[in-house]
Image (tube, rainbow, N blue to C red; front, side):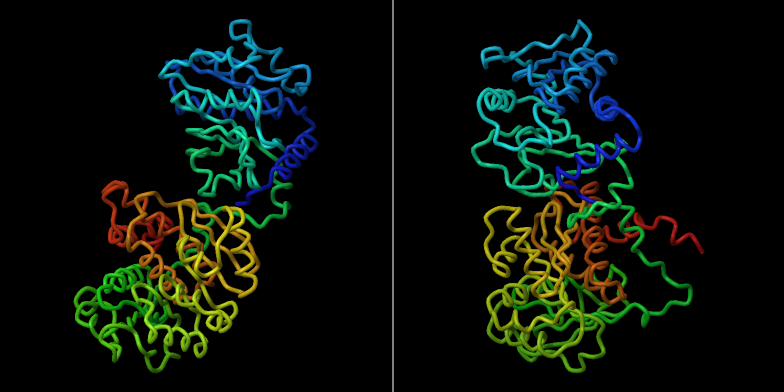
Length: 508
């Protein structure tokens, strides 16, 4: 699914109006009805609804919503801000359509701002995606009052004051929404950590924008849905055997960090790999043989850290490296040898990323189109460098992936997957309970297993990250967010796979 820019969204509106031969106010009515239906399903008509509208088309949306909610017996109060002599035509039409019972009250100074009851609902319809300058003056004061009201705030299409596809100037006021209801598609801003306090929980409602325009629109930004990843999952053949599903090698663990190796190995096995070998320091041999009996174990000559690659590397399908390995000199040499000598696809996580990030020589040895990096934000910074903001970080990630022809999973609330072509895919599963030690090791195991099964590196990233987050969501249903640990994700992986293909096991 594509993420469009603000300009493309306006063009999609225009194309829809032209293709369907309707007036712009009719499309506005359609959008208002979609928002109202979402609102009805979320809130009962027992709470007062305060709607604050600006003089543009977002304000027109708000006025149409006010009328529709009034027809559905919601107690609505409407307030308009700004110079209405310059109001948009569609705003004016919807202003004239307001029933007398909910006639709009103008706010010409902050003294006119109403007292909002404690359990009221506030709808933000001040500014939409067309905003091109920071919000200041009376509008900023109104936004400040709305933010300080300590009630549920629902923004129509986008929180007022927030730029949707570029950095918002620091001097502008921005609504802090509880919910944001976006028309047709989410905005790029919704996926960036720096906007969490403004966007709140975001939702999309379809309004019938031109599918032809959306299909042909050019973009580097996408988000993955259940339907997307369901198409990637490969069914197993009736006459399957373990040799068909790859032989993965994991380079994991060091003294005191063998848990990372166990987590990665168990996740790899639960993700369908045919065979798994774990190469670890000798201190981990008994641990792995006991904790992961389904995996084969190779002992490194060094007791504490990895000091050499296994023999016969060509018998493996993929190498996953990094969980718990540390950054000792011997281990750095192993990673260098891995990059320089193997022709296998590589999944590099944790300290493997830190080691590559610490050495321009190792970066220069990265094989093209065969590496997946899975950093968290700090590891990303060590590998790629510091960024000014989240938009800058996305651009830095794109430049790095293009330069080194690699794939990257930047882990977070909406993990961002970048390809060597510079495309970015945002994940839509996962929850805050996954912010705990070891969940990254689980992801390494999942992605490594998928690459071993002959998924392309891009497919392994998209499917693996989605499954990882889905397993976390299923675990939350069982143990909640606070108590969630990495092992819970592994326990839920079977259910996550079945969620993607609920009838596959029964088809035979």
